Amino acid sequence: MDREALPLDRRLRQEILFARERVYRFAGATPLEQLVLPGGGPEIWVKREDLSPVKAYKWRGACNRMAVLTPAEAARGVVTASAGNHAQGVALAARTLGIRARIYMPRPTPRIKQAAVRHHGGEWVEIHLAGDSYDDAVTAAREDEQATRAVYIHAYDDLQVMAGQGTLADEIILSGKGPFDAVYLQIGGGGMAAGVSTWLKTHWPQTRVVGVEGSGQACMKAAIAAGQPVPLEHLDLFCDGTAVRKAGELPFQICRDTLDAMETVTNAEVSQAIRTLWEGLRCVAEPAGAMGLAAVLKHREALAGKRVLVVLCGANIDFLQLGVIAQSLDSAGSASRTLRIHIPELPGMMVGLLDSCFEGLNITDFQYGKTDSGAARPVFTVTAEDPARVEALPARLAAGGFEWQDLTDAPDVVFRAIPLRGDLLQYPVFLRLDFYERPGALHDFLGRYLTGNANLCYFNYRQSGERIGRALIGLDFPSSYERDALLMTIPPSHGEGYRGCEPLDPAAQQRLVGG
Image: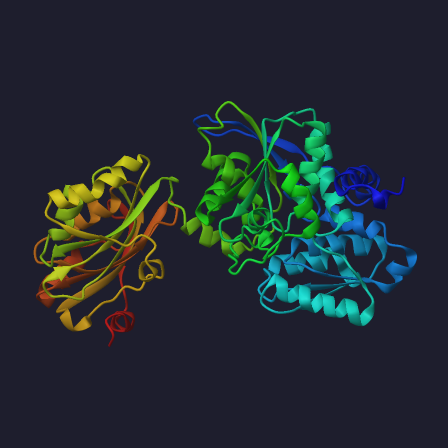
């Protein structure tokens, strides 16, 4: 029977079998490792596609597709569009097979992915940066295809590409670790989910297969709801490896039948999953690579006692993005809330506030600048391993007579816009403080030195996760004598509870107060 006449799902199963012979000419199988969660939960197994030659699963589909090019097609060369991982797979295949490839990537593509494409492709690839989005890169690549007759290698909407991705599921079956109660597969255009779900359902029909998308990029969920792929009006780019505006037509036809459920995860949930993978396996996932685990953690209690599988589909993350992710998480992975608190602008009131209301809470961010002669409005971000402690803070503030306002995720707080009116200050001094990061360290410093007529006029501190905390603080005095007396009592380094404290130079202080 003509294979082209077979239903799509049967053709895909056949092509996965054929792909077995092709893809392992380019690279070997990747391991399956267990991730143990502290405190219990499901038994989690992680397919480590981050350990492949291109640090992502995309090599499988690209290599399989290019391995079936005819000599005439190979002579014309190939062209593709990619945000990074598919491009590396095409580059690997191009160099191995001796095929010229032009790769169009969005201009914001992380440099690590551009460098990796050049590394894998060498002289066989050309990179062209086009537009600001994946869609823009696709348009440019398609125009190249029309002008040069090069073969377009689609990142996901291609039978051979889906079959190549399905070989990772074949390795899971052959690992002997299954079957699993549930499998969580991240979805961009849907190529990996289509290939993997088809193969898993063939061998383990009782396994529940869940598609996972970012809450701001759920194109497959939209396609299933509409009965056909539809473009998203808005697209979140945090998980750049799955940032696809419209699901592929072929993957949609497969996924609507093989997926048992769809799940969406937030960027914060993905960030926490990245942390969990680092703490459990010492691996660094790109955001898209952690989406499956994010969905598992979201339903950790419901999945307790179950055996589940996730795919760490990529680790090509820009180094600078790691800092953004780390800053979005508190040091204990605990509940968090940001509040602006109104207190009288009087000496000792700040310490009194900390003494009366913040017991048992960890201050991870403290922003304050004096803008009113009669009232202070410091902004605190607090965390606690017990969420109930964070939720109880407003009631404690109200009981103490303090007014407050919730500023969680407020733009001015996120971007650290700390106002300060220099005309309200008399004899200020601004200090850079380096202290040992332990519970109560800031409180101890303020309690020791914010005494007498010293008045806090500025505070800029954010917990970084290091052993050493760093803060820029301002103290104001009614006289130069009192200011100078305080400076003489603070040793420059290795004081009790802190390791360094030095005044800003006069020019820096003048800039800070707007002079």
